[in-house]
Length: 373
Image 1 (cartoon, one colour):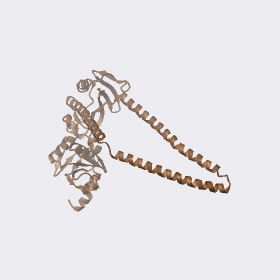
Image 2 (cartoon, helix red, strand yellow; image 1 turned 135 degrees about the horizontal axis):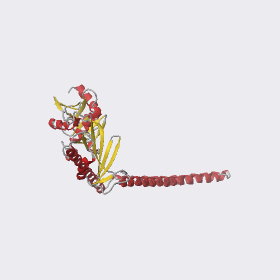
Image 3 (cartoon, one colour; image 1 turned 30 degrees about the vertical axis):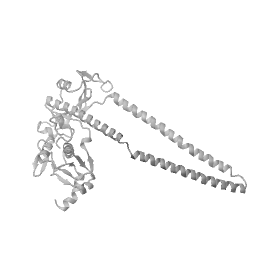
Image 4 (cartoon, helix red, strand yellow; image 1 turned 90 degrees about the horizontal axis):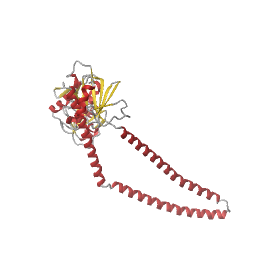
């Protein structure tokens, strides 16, 4: 690489889309990941062509380049820039390609100067279908795949019908055709979607397909509880604001009364005025001294509070880290459940299971991040 190319490299990588990876990817592994999004992806010299985009050969980035990219905490990363071949890819395929590569190889993506960790995003598996399945065709599969619902949530599904533990809602408005919901997983059937690259090899004669989105169910009572909690916190905040406003108003009124009293007592002879002025000066000195002491006390208290905040309790930090780890484990388990439903539907209905970025899922574990790292 020439010096001029090295000079332009940070700007090109920052514009992206770019996949930043912790280690140099094996060419065969990188090709296998690209073929999950485009089964017809192929090598072109050291690069890979996929869906009208070129995955350029990985480039090693050291500290100075990473600092220009806004990544100061890493010593070495490998960058795979995604460049469009000809016109811009349809549906921002190059951006989703960079995110999918980073997701499966344990890295993160960079596009238009904005870094993104794909593993931190909540994604819902999809199932590509050649047509909208009839309820008689999909209900037996969902009855086995979903955890059964006890009853129909009348507020959320006023037109829902409970069939063998699965709530069925026939929508038939816009793109949404049907909705099927279990106890914790919901399957939304949509029609009229453009044929993705992952499905073009399977159904080259189609121009549109149906999509089944597998997402978590949000219960109505949980939403109401969140709204009530938000309203309560808002009322508490308003009450606190009023109390603070009242507390601030009291010293100002007292200061105003003192000033008026001093003005009222000024109607005496010159000697009395001089004496009172001297007394006032000494009183002012005493007050300023007491104010200084109060200020020093307040400053020391603030310093003590700052020091106490700085010296955080390690037990609290450990508890927070344990809570984060538990939340991450729960999110992974829930994602595996949804991915298992998607793979089951794809196998039963002769469809294609994929993630939200268009990468195929052969088994539920393929939905987890870092699977090819």
